[in-house]
Picture 1 (cartoon, rainbow, N blue to C red):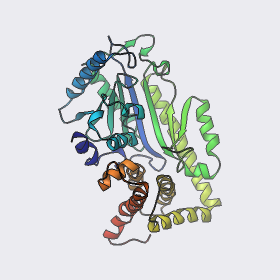
Picture 2: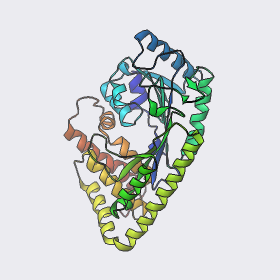
Picture 3: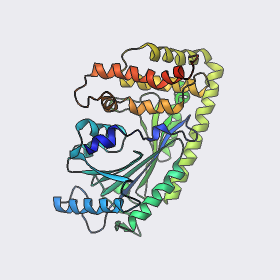
Picture 4: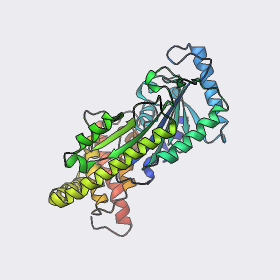
Length: 360
């Protein structure tokens, strides 16, 4: 089955990468929206017109480099768990996953996707570990230029790239960072820092897949406006913001070490003890453990690679666990919680033990 080959056996993903300043910036993302000239926007198209757009988009991608770089995946060819797996990696949206006639282009490394006929004709999502917005932008800009030699994008001199959403005119590009701010949260300064970002035009949301609030002191920060700015300006402003966040978080970390060392040590090593001994672990608690263990790694107290902890944010979600145990649809929550606990130890503890033991 196409979906099984692409989604279950593949081990790619941004979360296996390192990246600059990844003690604070877990990953970078760029989202690019494009629409084709001569067609109604999605939501207004009939079936025949939607099929013409789909055919043109697939042909444009398949002609880029070689036929193995991108793969068109029909949503209807995937099992429900495989669709959820793509959602868990933020490669498709929930609404998109419900339409079996839709097609997504997947790059082989699972770091880039393009949803065809979502709320734009093309919605490209590209990810990379750490602070990597400039290099990510160059990659996406190159892809955009190549696609534009094969299809005509709807645009105007006054409003830039055109689409169905007014808040997406102009560059139709959004950059974002997935950030970890435990010291700012613990010191009570995070609300002030995030409020300042919102006031100057950025969007800030908590990391909360399927939950209320924000899990593990992780946040998503992105530009809000796309009209009136050049793409390079969007990237530059976000990079300036990231440098500020990195500075604030590291200063708060030093302050906590000076004022709350014991509390910090207790949090980190209590999380380590839970992780090593628990037999059931739900996703929310797992993310909270990851947050505490990341702090321990950043402070030099624990020997785990940050990439391993980052990978657990993605790989310990339900559909990834279902793929891991080979039960794509029927695994009960209790089984998944048990498998998640085993997975944490396998990814974090086993490599240390097989490498000659550890002091954790």
